Length: 291
Length: 159
Image (cartoon, rainbow over all chains, first blue to last red; front, top):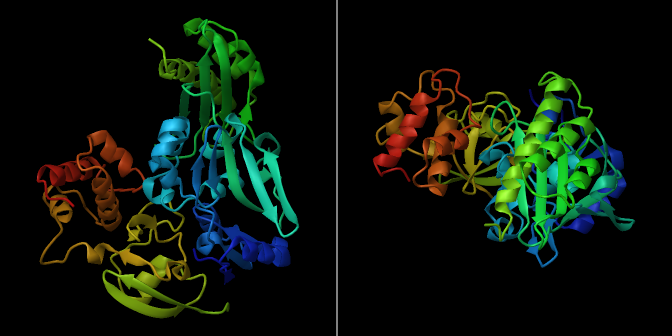
């Protein structure tokens, strides 16, 4: 179908975009890569009267890496994350996750910020934001504020962002240098939204016990979540199949997944356990300094 | 009706200036306003890949872009890839390997395969399948499409 008529507003910088958001508020929608919004408009499920197109806004495309964090401008294309040597070196889990987002032609256009704010419960980027304790930098004509990922995601397709606010940057806090990682998911076809997705990070101390663990899940609830119960099992544990089996079982127990057209709750619970177990084993093999 | 927007785009090397309604999709602009009907309209929500074109050197879904957003851009459509008289090596490989039946998906497949081979000059079968997973074909079962891309590689002519 064709979208309903709308006005296209084309700000040149963030200040202009914020001024437009302030005057239109709920009467306008922000257009980033358009890979989720435009399908909704073509189906007329979304009929915004005004579209604020960020594609001409300068200054939202930067990728910055320092010792502690990776900062991505909201309009960084997913494909540019995939191709960034700095990200491949310092945060390879992000590269692994983004390669599973849809297809090249979608990632060429789709943005980091758009996916994060759209907040699909099975999407890869929000899951990584949760796993890495990311910080969302929001701006409005009223001022700016930072929101932690765990507070940003509030439910199905719902976030803490106000109608006059714009996500300008996302800051991923980097895991310890040399930590192992794995992002894995089960989907009907490569590139589809995940039925269940798992992100894990793992690092060992000098005595080879686990001293850093992150386990986050997507597709098992209205928003991605970190599972503290599983991380507690891992911390201080001896790496190995037995530990990962226990962690997987605890993950399956910790979730209460939905049943929908794609999979039953029981199936999602089952593969949550399996994926967590497998992801931890993969992550162990990627910890730097392991024989 | 919303205010029309004036745009200038270069399509297959030719510059076009036009006034478009904001909601005019890029694929409708190419087909209806420029008469370039080689780019096909399938699902209109980014799933099927039939409308894949090259925008400033990258493949995009032209059903998920508004024509107004292409102002100043350089576009390559299937009409700019080869001609009836001189097929592109990839098109020739599709023909020789029977990689199309109805042909509806073919323009999108060719554009996606062009980008794939530009990024990876010698893709494995698995890499071809992943690279083309965003383009649906309801006829071939994909086997001959993968074969055609491989053939284009081993002919050493695909660019």
